[in-house]
Image 1 (tube, rainbow, N blue to C red):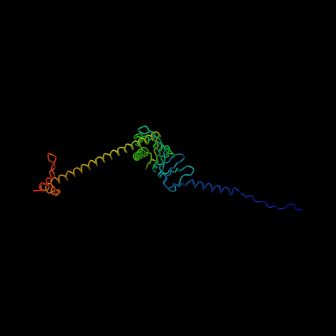
Image 2 (image 1 turned 60 degrees about the horizontal axis):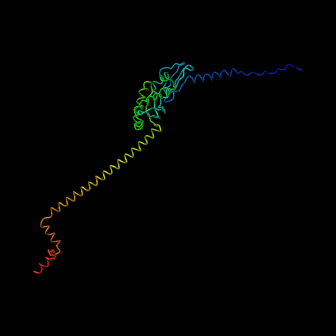
Image 3 (image 1 turned 90 degrees about the vertical axis):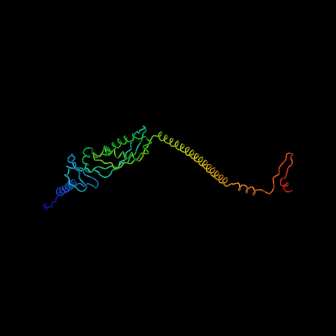
Length: 277
């Protein structure tokens, strides 16, 4: 029996020839993605090279960067909305809790300096403390009651005060709206009692003025009537001549002469006497 049988050898698969190209492709893709950065609309890109912030910013669009050595921090330059709840004391030492809605934006040209000097959390580091500081200063110039009636003035004062503090840094406040004022229960009760008292006083004053006006109207009516009566009487008196009076007497005479009572109690009929003759 021939034991020298040629058994074909199984060719071993060379994994290296497959793995290495795949790794190279993956690395190339990673490098490519780290070479390109896209800055979205309304944003600017702050370039950081090995921890150092570069001056200037990347505008909207596609930009190249050094992979692994540079990173790009995107800063939102659109109008940003911030709601702040804060508490301050009024001129009359009342506690005023205020809810504010603030619109602000970051200057595109100063995005890198803000990130370099403050960091990405500039809202909590700069904006919120500035709002608290300016609001407390303004609230202290008004009484609690005046704060309610001067919302517009307080809002304008906040915009002006915040811009004075933040513009040089590169932050611009465009609008401040006062959402709510909240006072202590004791103060609210005092205001309600004051309003009730004012309403009662106003009602009493209105009733008083109404009575005065009615009295004046009655007096004026009587005066006008008296003047009218006087004028009418004057006209009548002016029209009563001797001839008119005589005619009036004749019109009213019934044709009978008057009867006269004598000293003895007898009644003499003048008409009868004159008739007998």
